[in-house]
Each structure stands twice: as C-alpha cells, then as structure tokens.
Length: 118
Ligand SMILES: [Zn+2]
Image (cartoon, rainbow, N blue to C red):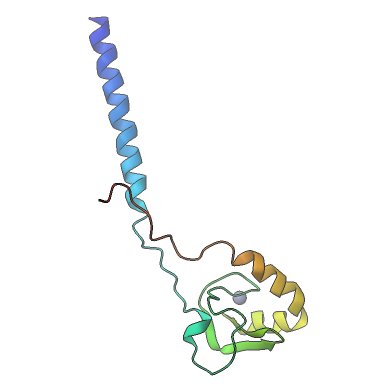
C-alpha cells in the first residue's frame, strides 16, 4: 500500500512540474515587441550611426524619435527624450561606448525558438 501512495505522489509531482514548465514556456509568446522603430526607419537622408539602433544610448529605452538626434562623426544617433539628447551632447564618447554595450543585448526575441518543427 505504501508503494501505491508513493507512486501517486511521484506522478502528482511530475505533473505539477510539467504544468509549471508549460505555463512559463507559453509566456514568451512574442508579446514583447519593440515599441519603437529602428534608426533605419527614419528616412531623413542622414547616415545612421547604427541602422539597427532601437534604444536610446543614454537611458537604454526604446521609442526613438526622428526629431531627437545628434550627428556624430560616425553618423546620426537618435534619442527618446529631449533630456537624453542634451545629456548625450555633453558626453558623446562616453555614451557611444555605452551604446556599444547596450546593443549587444538583442532588443528583439529570437525567432528561431520553439522545439520540434519538422
Ligand atoms: Zn533616453
């Protein structure tokens, strides 16, 4: 009798863990889209510092605005807020370096996700 109870407990535990996995898996459904547009979508004829710039180099947030930009030696950089643009102007090199680190983290979820597709 003891073995039966143990077995039921085991099955219950496995089912619980599996359910938990499934739930957290379906969470990343691709709802976290980037709100803003990349620098390359701003068709203003200027050379972009980074065509795939999605985030503000000062605060790291998305939501870049075409009218908020600074032209650096290496191209045009966009910002989400006026204050970020002003901040950048005072520390151009510092924030360009910071941006290089920021952009290593992908802003978009990988589309190559999901198991078993054949
Ligand atoms: Zn900002």
